[in-house]
Image (spheres, rainbow, N blue to C red):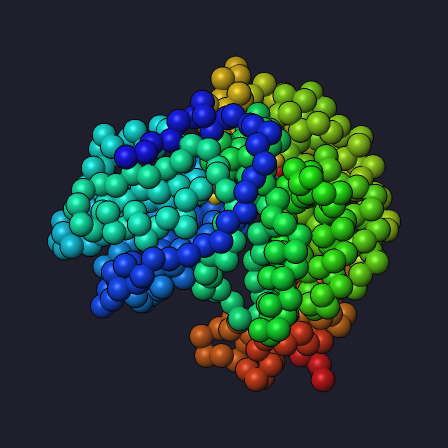
Length: 471
Ligand code: SAH
Ligand code: SF4
Ligand code: F3S
């Protein structure tokens, strides 16, 4: 048994990160034959992509994907720890699985992902949920066959969670959700330690993948017919800083663009490391999409300082304007936290000022949620939940107004959309995203699935648009 320890997860060493190749022992390859699995994913794109790896590993072991949780022999919850409600959802689901296991004790049930990296969560599992079968973390997904075999033969809870990150493992198999767009990790972990955030503890030290491995993956995706890649990391702008070659995010964007893949996106951009070179490269290449997610968190300099974000309202606005000016037709979205400890009405108004100035294409807004072990969770918080909800409501109204306004500019325009899926059950409408990441429901023949087509926008709402394909 290996349980996570927060004190260890906080440590950052200067040790070189080693890159290793994934492999699976033959002894694990038939373990799942005749059995089915179901993976339920919570949280961000990073988790979505990890689930794609987990599914492929399970299929190497002979498991087949079940159509729903109720039909599965193996259930894994790939969890998120970012806010309290993410936690609550998972514990609610664990309760449901308990009933299923009472009816059918042969079900194997497990927890992985960011909550599994939390000391407190694993203690609670060991205390109250001993009937679970496996717990593993974000650092050892590649060890799933070994852990599963142990649990299946011991019939006891196996907990294998590393507190520290370890090596980068290349070539973990992947079962992608889409045939047209793909997630590509470019780095793991985060060293920013924003005071409210749990991610540096659950995902470990920043580790950039080697550029050649990333480019190789993109080239392979292109060859396999993929139209779009999204480069993933908790703060992609810091890519390369931990490598001992002189190579950064602007170099990676430029090399990825030169593979000729049709669409390139990247998330998430911390304003701190956003360089002029990056802006130049984004504006230079047509296949780098004009869409940037640029989290603000707060518009108050006092709160930004307490959050450890290392930029000011003024420097954020300067960056924002620079991007708007240089990247043609760019859409910019953001994340905002309201009700950070000690946030006053005046601080909140500073946030509204920035929103009114930036008129974001859209924004994800959250009420501050204290996360165990983070500095912000120990700060004095004297604002009532009622007040925080009032602020969130007010902010959302403004955010939605600007989102609708931004979408209205698209009415009657012709835009490019990658048709990625059906949007209605009868198959008469498809859906996809514009270059600028606007969701569009498109009237188009099914044969066009997977293609980037011209679409005339016929109707807009705050969160989506309707359109018709034009030949
Ligand atoms: N790496 C990204 C953020 C990833 S988490 C970045 O730095 O921008 C996604 C969003 O969740 C954050 O941008 C933040 O707005 C929100 N968030 C993170 N921790 C939170 C907390 N403790 N309470 C409320 N919202 C939080
Ligand atoms: Fe969390 Fe900050 Fe890292 Fe984003 S940059 S993951 S908010 S610590
Ligand atoms: Fe959640 Fe972990 Fe992502 S905490 S937001 S799943 S990195």
